[in-house]
Image (cartoon, rainbow, N blue to C red):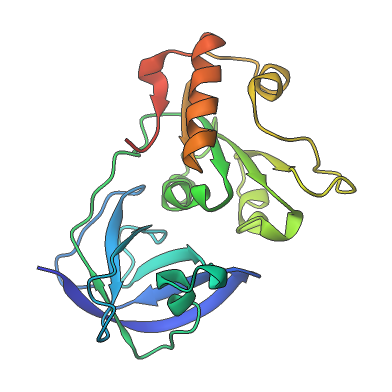
Length: 221
């Protein structure tokens, strides 16, 4: 049975990514990295469900989502880009296979960062972020979600990459086998991978070819 939850507030995180804070149903629990199906609680939209990842902490009094808006699609995310505080969303039970299993390298492409937001924030809060690395690929610097947060996270090693902005000092993508060979020293560690389907498939294939343990690869199945 979906829960109808009121939007408490929203804010823009980047030029096309919006953060939503929502009421939290009593007894509603999730694990960092999990997602749920979300729909707008409005006539004509209740059956239009989309998966979004929780980006808040597990014991926050409210729920949080960080969602990339696609106005050109004229769909759910376009509508979410224009929805106001006070309106309601429908959320189902939490689900997801991306869970923290120990220190490693997180490789994210664009909005694929979102499952890692709650995981990294939770680790930082518990003082267990050391030994983890974030490799985050985007088209431009303006697309980097929460860059200041990751740079300020003491103990987290960060490597930001942009693919469509050659004048940027961060230019150096794409994140492919050649990139991994140049920037990863230990393929025996864990790798957490999330992004567009092709990127995830290509990276996991490259990691395996470079000697990564298949059991040490964590991605959404």
